[in-house]
Image (cartoon, rainbow, N blue to C red; front, side):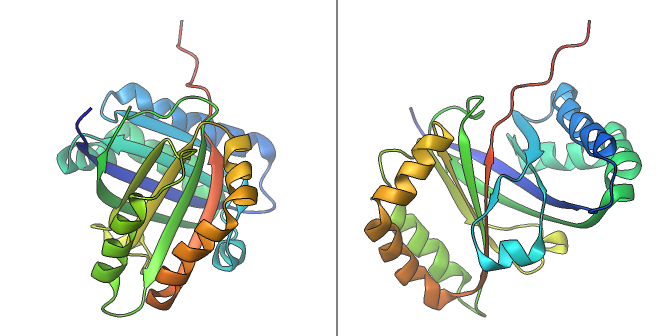
Length: 221
């Protein structure tokens, strides 16, 4: 299957510690319901499972929304759609202390929507000044020796700087399951470390989080 240019949109939310769990559930449910707008070709939202970097732990993000679009125009239409604006205003902003978003264009192999139960590792990189292009090139080279457990890789330079906090490169790896991701961490340490050694000199900061793709929202009757 030929690679297809796809717009990636990821949002990290930090829900206030004192928030009633029922309000958190309502936020997640309403975010997931936005897939019904039929603008995104994939949309999933749920809790961050693990922080995998010091910057991620310090930021304390609790939830992740990951969506994909066929074009920048579709992402723009989603962003200004009244239903999306209402969800953000009524259910997100009142309970969140922090939000950041990163968008990039990726050449995707495979399905646009990862299967339910797939594990996702999201890496957001803040390159040192002038290093963004070199970092993107290094990631391109790294893709050629990605472990077999990775079913899909997506990466690119952010094109929406307003809410990205300087994190200019996004990288997303999809695994068949959380067990496969854990096995990679345990069994491919040398390979992972070799990649880290190449990119570490280019980075000022990196946020790494893990999440699991939830089931699609139940259809309304």
